[in-house]
Image 1 (cartoon, rainbow, N blue to C red):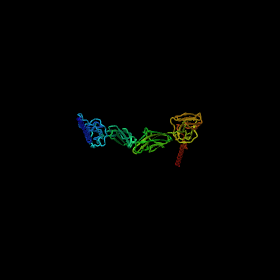
Image 2: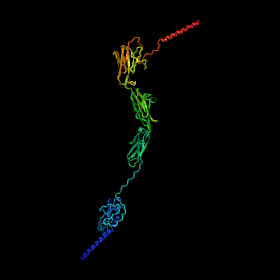
Image 3: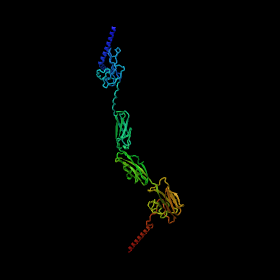
Image 4: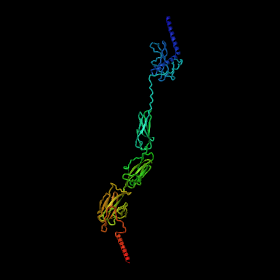
Amino acid sequence: MQQSCSSTFRRGAAIGAVVVVLTTSSAFGIGAATASAAPAAAPAAAGSVRDARTSTTSTAAAPGTTTPATTTTGTPGAAGTASTSTDSTSTASTSSPDAPPAGTVQNAPTTPTTAEPTGSATQSAADPAATPAPTAAPTPTTLDATAPAAPAAPTATTTTATITGTVRIGQVLHVTTTGFTGATTTAWTSNGKPAGSETTYTITPADAGHVIAVTVSSTVQGEAPATASTTAVPDQIAFTEQSTPEAPIRLASTAGERFAHQFTATGSATALHYLLLSGPTAFPVPGNDHPIAPESVSLDESTGFLSGAPTTAGEYDFQVMAANGNRAATEYVHLSVRPAAAKTLQLFIDDPSDAPLAGAPGAWGLGEDGRLLRYLAEASDDASGPVDAVRLGQGGSLVITTTPLDAYGNDTRLAGTPTPTVTSSRTSDAVAGGTSAWDTVVRFPEAGRSTITVTDGTLTTSFAVDVEQRTAASAVGHHTGAAPHGTLAYTGSDESGPLAWALGLLAAGAGLLVHRLRRRRI
């Protein structure tokens, strides 16, 4: 019994000793345990750690003793930072042959902790009286994964742009480049203003005096843009409407009506002046060595605006010139002025017979005012009159030529217009066509007065014809031709005058001869 009590006492003493030792270790040994954990963490950070988020470090206890375990959590990239320790303490079992060496990283699950900003280890809450442990020195952390290397800086390349082509209005410029490795964009400018984005550029008249430039840019980062430019585009004046002497600009107008046409020239860096070339200043053209413009046509020298209201129908050739003092261009123009609508009828009346009446002129005219005039001389435009009627011998004929005139005196006879209709007041008179559509022949077989009426469209005019019986005394010599003709005006002498003068001279000569013979006898 005594042995049993003694054994029990000894066991209680041993347990009490163990409790004292554990208490002492709790009071004074925590700092040492934490300090020993720091150097153990170093080798783990140096390459033993496999978990990128959390590392666990354990310290092996001496055989037969139990020590609290400390867990440290690391943040990727935060070298030498110790995490807070857990407030739980695990008791290490007695060492065994299979126990790992002290300081080896264990892969056992641990309780996650929050990292302190200061990077120092935090003691367990189980022992608030423990002395704060010194801050662990920062140690580098080596990760298994190798970080990607930074990209190498691109090698600088030289880019160039070159413009090829003739610098002249109407020509095409090309751009060629070198040094670009990717896609490019092109931007053309004229006098600094955007002009196009293609790889080619056509020079226009508006570019006169301007510098053409191009910029080529790359879509590859790091490649610098390249630029090139030309010299100033020289002046090259040209009209927007092309013409030649053989193929002029054709314009048309009607007599008395106003017409206008805008002439425009380009290709000059300075202001242009427009000139009307007519008469002696105009250039000869095919079929017209002396071109001339209608008198009422004028040209604005600053704008090139041609306008006017010509009244004389006809075909006109002239030129318009644009000049800037150094260069010039010429536009060839052909203007057709048509007659206006017919307002009156003009008649020419001729007696084509070989034996006209004595004293009759043989030709008459009916003017615009409706008066009947007679012509005094053959092929003469001078008229005398007026007269009441045309005098014609019985059986004679008249040729009537009709000419419709507009308000300005222009002949309106054009192809396709109505031909005149001629009628007589007496049915015995015979009306027939003449040598042209505008000629009519009327024969008068009976003596008396006839009224001839001429109608053309809406226009009408008339005149009287006195047909006289022929006698031997009323006929004169032959009349030839159908052109205007007549008798010459009386001069106050006749065919017997020269003979009387000759006889008088002969008598005077005879008297002088007799007188001289008498003196010799004396």
